[in-house]
Image (cartoon, rainbow, N blue to C red; front, side, top):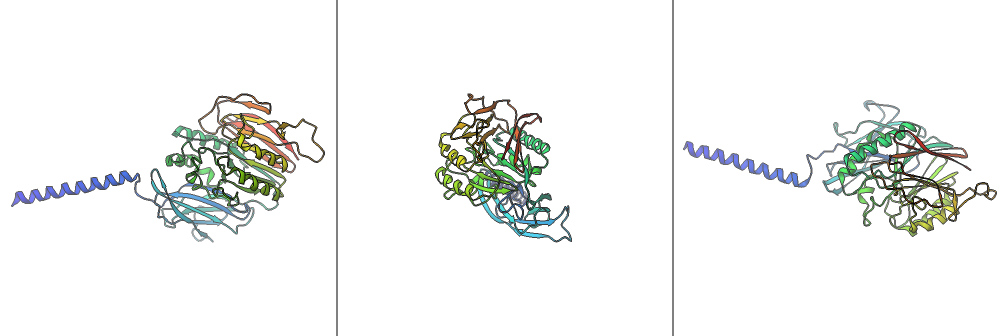
Length: 414
């Protein structure tokens, strides 16, 4: 009888072990640890009026988690006993290479211009909130603004993303007054690598939770007409071209600047028609275009030649580009030719300047051949960034390497 009892106990233990192993194998196959509603990959963007609204996106490992935004006026570390604005997020799920994830997007509207807000995002349950972050809405009647331009972080390894984080950190240290960041595309090497996205956001989380990051779609962000891994991470204006995937073409204003964001990877003709309307309808003094593949960079992308005619017609001041992983700046160009200094017709602008701000990550290309349109063309094999400051009728552009050395500077005057 005792032997039978011991055998039953041993058999029971073996069965339990086998069950645990089976459960563990299923957990391993699913590629996920314990599901959590805690937010990560948090980023803020503009979606509507920068003076009265702010948009947010974050991920959760629990694809069924709820999403909530809470914000208060002023600086606050705790929201207890404060007048809290609470906004529910639009929550969906996305399949990744590490299992299904929750995607949460929301926008706070009806805010007061020129006002500091503190906010947090999460599920609404204690212990599942982000760290409290801050942002300030645009002031009314602002006639000046500074912003940062970076491109091609294109991380693949942990070190790549550390370099990206160091670059953006140096950029904001150099231009602490910057109100937003424009990234010219190729945020990661492989858009289906969820760990890459986590490191892209993780290395700059304390920065982009407060300063809007406005992204451009690059050829490593849209692959074979699939751009969901890119667009799922950002809550962007839905005012872009008909036929374009939402978040791949759009425009926004800040102070005296109008920024048109184009996607060089698809829907080029319809974007051209949209761009005409977009530039025609703006009353902003300064017109800036951001796109990935360059019209005039280390080399030129022939498929976007028609866009340059639109830049000329609507007097675009500056085109921010990426893709070449080197630094270049053009002479002012109009109709594909250099505009000679001092030969502008009365009342006309001096032409459009095209820049490529080198890579902000670890990947560089050999310097391409010099072209007739190059005013500056270098490869220093260092991460770079630029600060663009607009005040009244003057635009100042300054390009730095990650060590803080200024490598290029120019001034445009309207």
